Amino acid sequence: MKKIYLVHGWGGNNSSEGWFGWLKEEMKKRKAEVIGFNMPDTDNPEIEKWTSFLENNVKIDNETYFIGHSIGCQTILRFLERIDKKIAGCVFVAGWFNLKDLQENEIEIAKPWLTRKINFDKVKKNCTNFLAIFSDDDPYVPVSDAELFKKNLNSKIIIKHNKEHFNNVSKIPEILDFVVPKKLEK
Image (tube, rainbow, N blue to C red):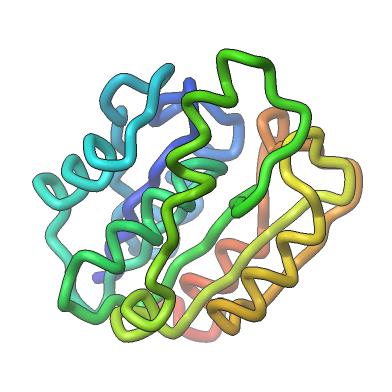
Protein backbone atom coordinates (compact mmCIF):
# COMPACT_ATOMS: atom_id res chain seq x y z
CA MET A 1 0.00 0.00 0.00
CA LYS A 2 1.25 3.46 -0.86
CA LYS A 3 1.94 5.56 2.20
CA ILE A 4 1.94 9.35 1.91
CA TYR A 5 3.38 11.69 4.50
CA LEU A 6 1.96 15.21 4.39
CA VAL A 7 4.21 17.99 5.72
CA HIS A 8 2.45 21.33 6.18
CA GLY A 9 3.88 24.80 5.82
CA TRP A 10 5.04 27.51 8.19
CA GLY A 11 2.36 28.34 10.75
CA GLY A 12 0.16 25.48 9.57
CA ASN A 13 -0.96 22.12 10.85
CA ASN A 14 -2.08 18.81 9.37
CA SER A 15 -5.46 20.23 8.40
CA SER A 16 -4.72 23.93 7.86
CA GLU A 17 -4.92 24.00 4.06
CA GLY A 18 -8.20 23.31 2.27
CA TRP A 19 -6.64 20.77 -0.05
CA PHE A 20 -5.27 18.60 2.78
CA GLY A 21 -8.67 17.12 3.70
CA TRP A 22 -9.57 16.65 0.05
CA LEU A 23 -6.26 14.89 -0.58
CA LYS A 24 -6.73 12.53 2.36
CA GLU A 25 -10.23 11.55 1.17
CA GLU A 26 -9.17 11.07 -2.45
CA MET A 27 -6.13 9.00 -1.52
CA LYS A 28 -8.28 6.79 0.71
CA LYS A 29 -10.48 6.10 -2.34
CA ARG A 30 -7.32 5.13 -4.22
CA LYS A 31 -6.27 2.75 -1.43
CA ALA A 32 -3.37 4.88 -0.23
CA GLU A 33 -2.72 5.87 3.38
CA VAL A 34 -2.11 9.55 4.19
CA ILE A 35 -0.40 10.53 7.41
CA GLY A 36 -0.40 14.22 8.30
CA PHE A 37 1.77 15.70 11.01
CA ASN A 38 1.60 18.72 13.24
CA MET A 39 5.20 19.86 12.96
CA PRO A 40 6.91 21.23 16.09
CA ASP A 41 6.88 24.95 16.88
CA THR A 42 5.14 25.71 13.61
CA ASP A 43 5.34 29.49 14.01
CA ASN A 44 9.12 29.31 14.44
CA PRO A 45 10.21 26.39 12.24
CA GLU A 46 13.80 25.23 12.65
CA ILE A 47 15.60 22.89 10.26
CA GLU A 48 16.94 20.54 12.92
CA LYS A 49 13.64 20.27 14.83
CA TRP A 50 11.58 19.64 11.70
CA THR A 51 13.93 17.13 10.05
CA SER A 52 14.49 15.29 13.34
CA PHE A 53 10.73 15.12 13.79
CA LEU A 54 10.44 13.31 10.44
CA GLU A 55 13.33 10.99 11.30
CA ASN A 56 11.56 10.02 14.51
CA ASN A 57 8.06 9.66 13.05
CA VAL A 58 8.20 8.15 9.57
CA LYS A 59 8.64 4.60 8.40
CA ILE A 60 9.68 4.58 4.78
CA ASP A 61 9.94 2.04 2.00
CA ASN A 62 9.89 2.08 -1.79
CA GLU A 63 6.14 2.87 -1.82
CA THR A 64 6.46 5.95 0.39
CA TYR A 65 5.63 9.43 -0.92
CA PHE A 66 6.06 12.81 0.70
CA ILE A 67 3.85 15.77 -0.10
CA GLY A 68 4.96 19.12 1.24
CA HIS A 69 3.60 22.62 1.26
CA SER A 70 5.93 25.63 1.35
CA ILE A 71 8.54 25.15 4.11
CA GLY A 72 7.33 21.53 4.32
CA CYS A 73 9.03 21.03 0.93
CA GLN A 74 12.30 22.33 2.34
CA THR A 75 11.89 19.97 5.30
CA ILE A 76 11.37 16.96 3.03
CA LEU A 77 14.47 17.79 0.95
CA ARG A 78 16.60 18.18 4.07
CA PHE A 79 15.21 14.93 5.47
CA LEU A 80 16.03 13.09 2.23
CA GLU A 81 19.63 14.26 2.34
CA ARG A 82 19.98 12.71 5.84
CA ILE A 83 18.69 9.20 5.13
CA ASP A 84 19.91 6.21 3.14
CA LYS A 85 16.64 4.72 1.87
CA LYS A 86 14.95 5.09 -1.49
CA ILE A 87 11.38 6.39 -1.58
CA ALA A 88 8.81 6.41 -4.40
CA GLY A 89 8.36 10.15 -4.88
CA CYS A 90 7.76 13.67 -3.65
CA VAL A 91 5.27 16.40 -4.47
CA PHE A 92 6.21 19.97 -3.62
CA VAL A 93 3.42 22.56 -3.53
CA ALA A 94 4.68 26.16 -3.37
CA GLY A 95 8.14 24.89 -2.49
CA TRP A 96 10.96 27.40 -2.50
CA PHE A 97 14.65 28.13 -2.48
CA ASN A 98 14.06 31.90 -2.46
CA LEU A 99 11.38 34.02 -0.84
CA LYS A 100 10.01 37.49 -1.46
CA ASP A 101 8.06 40.08 0.53
CA LEU A 102 8.91 38.77 4.00
CA GLN A 103 8.20 40.75 7.15
CA GLU A 104 11.20 41.63 9.33
CA ASN A 105 10.47 38.91 11.92
CA GLU A 106 10.06 36.32 9.13
CA ILE A 107 13.48 37.10 7.64
CA GLU A 108 15.31 35.81 10.74
CA ILE A 109 13.25 32.60 10.82
CA ALA A 110 13.72 31.98 7.09
CA LYS A 111 17.43 32.80 6.95
CA PRO A 112 18.80 29.33 7.84
CA TRP A 113 16.40 27.70 5.39
CA LEU A 114 17.52 30.07 2.64
CA THR A 115 21.26 29.96 3.29
CA ARG A 116 22.04 26.38 4.35
CA LYS A 117 22.89 24.42 1.20
CA ILE A 118 21.03 21.24 0.26
CA ASN A 119 22.99 18.24 -1.04
CA PHE A 120 20.90 17.53 -4.12
CA ASP A 121 23.03 14.52 -5.12
CA LYS A 122 22.17 12.85 -1.81
CA VAL A 123 18.49 13.80 -2.19
CA LYS A 124 18.39 12.28 -5.70
CA LYS A 125 20.03 9.11 -4.39
CA ASN A 126 16.99 8.63 -2.17
CA CYS A 127 14.34 9.79 -4.64
CA THR A 128 14.23 10.39 -8.38
CA ASN A 129 10.52 11.06 -8.85
CA PHE A 130 9.58 14.69 -8.16
CA LEU A 131 6.64 16.95 -8.99
CA ALA A 132 6.78 20.66 -8.12
CA ILE A 133 3.64 22.81 -8.37
CA PHE A 134 3.77 26.60 -8.39
CA SER A 135 1.38 29.49 -8.87
CA ASP A 136 2.12 32.38 -11.20
CA ASP A 137 0.89 34.85 -8.54
CA ASP A 138 2.42 33.42 -5.35
CA PRO A 139 3.12 36.41 -3.08
CA TYR A 140 6.04 34.62 -1.36
CA VAL A 141 7.61 32.23 -3.87
CA PRO A 142 9.11 33.56 -7.09
CA VAL A 143 7.87 31.47 -10.02
CA SER A 144 11.51 31.36 -11.19
CA ASP A 145 12.13 28.81 -8.41
CA ALA A 146 10.41 26.29 -10.71
CA GLU A 147 13.57 26.29 -12.82
CA LEU A 148 15.66 25.53 -9.73
CA PHE A 149 13.50 22.50 -8.91
CA LYS A 150 13.87 21.33 -12.50
CA LYS A 151 17.64 21.94 -12.58
CA ASN A 152 18.48 20.57 -9.12
CA LEU A 153 16.05 17.63 -8.98
CA ASN A 154 14.94 17.01 -12.56
CA SER A 155 11.47 17.67 -11.19
CA LYS A 156 8.33 17.70 -13.29
CA ILE A 157 6.93 21.23 -13.11
CA ILE A 158 3.36 22.51 -13.12
CA ILE A 159 2.62 26.22 -12.98
CA LYS A 160 -0.98 26.96 -12.07
CA HIS A 161 -2.71 30.31 -12.54
CA ASN A 162 -4.06 32.51 -9.77
CA LYS A 163 -3.61 30.04 -6.89
CA GLU A 164 -1.39 32.37 -4.81
CA HIS A 165 0.39 30.27 -2.11
CA PHE A 166 -2.22 27.46 -2.34
CA ASN A 167 -3.57 28.33 1.12
CA ASN A 168 -7.12 28.82 -0.15
CA VAL A 169 -7.18 26.06 -2.75
CA SER A 170 -9.62 23.20 -2.17
CA LYS A 171 -8.01 20.59 -4.43
CA ILE A 172 -4.94 19.94 -6.58
CA PRO A 173 -5.85 17.02 -8.89
CA GLU A 174 -2.37 16.73 -10.39
CA ILE A 175 -1.14 15.31 -7.08
CA LEU A 176 -3.50 12.34 -7.35
CA ASP A 177 -2.38 11.36 -10.82
CA PHE A 178 1.28 11.69 -9.89
CA VAL A 179 1.05 9.49 -6.79
CA VAL A 180 -1.62 6.98 -7.85
CA PRO A 181 -2.38 7.17 -11.57
CA LYS A 182 -5.92 6.05 -12.44
CA LYS A 183 -4.63 3.04 -14.39
CA LEU A 184 -3.00 1.74 -11.18
CA GLU A 185 -6.11 2.01 -9.03
CA LYS A 186 -7.56 -1.34 -7.99
